[in-house]
Image (tube, rainbow, N blue to C red; front, side, top):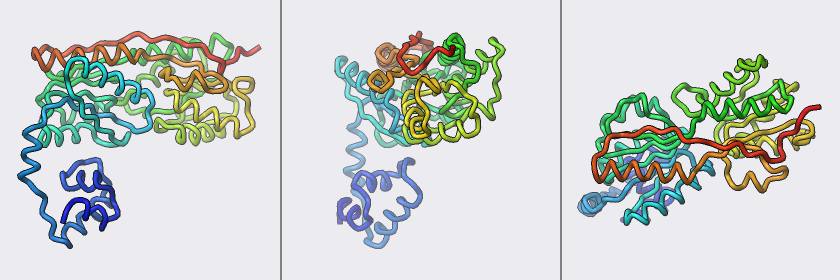
Length: 335
């Protein structure tokens, strides 16, 4: 009896069965139950000697990506891998669901694979605050800040999200928009979406624009599908909106499709602005106006901080990187 046999009998993939047998946290309870039922029925025993040898041999850098639909992270992964290869380092990439516990997964990874260091793409600071202390290898958190968490082995490199969002709303207001909605993200104070929410709120307060978070803002996951659904909810609740600021480009693109299906033209009837600056936004119709994050600099600074931590046990660094406002065609000036 092999893992392939277990996969066939349980109706799951080989990789999924492997994660269940290795007790990885990124598996649903139902899938775990299904696999373990077959394991118990067949009396399957994993080859622990082979597993032990694999654990001992592993020395690569782990890249943990939080979210499978985030196109910004896809660009960052490619850049990070290229930079690590240039330094003669291997990288093992692990993709987690947007709502998964990346710190619990990293703890498991350290026990089983013993990576030299870990690069987190995205992360919930609440999870780091609660459980990161058990991780001892050098780590870097990209696209969120860990400056106030106080861990001696955790650096962070991120865009100045609050100021970027503030300037995005300021730009919309400069085009005559007074009723501006915010779309996407998680408003928890430990999530990156919270910084973008605060930037939006700050701009509205400075300009004297109406801002009712419960009414004008609709959170959602970072995906086309969720952006589409959330935009419809937001417009039904706030039909007076003349502009939407989406906290990611994929959310903005989903919203534009929803607006089209609602019979609204972008930007003639309603303007849309995104955040990230991913390539696909510059090929959409209309071309997306957005806040561009510098993915090359994010990757370079993150890899540099991680390698210095691994090779020299350097003290952690925490950096806020600049951003760029890209004017496309999805925002119109009100007459």
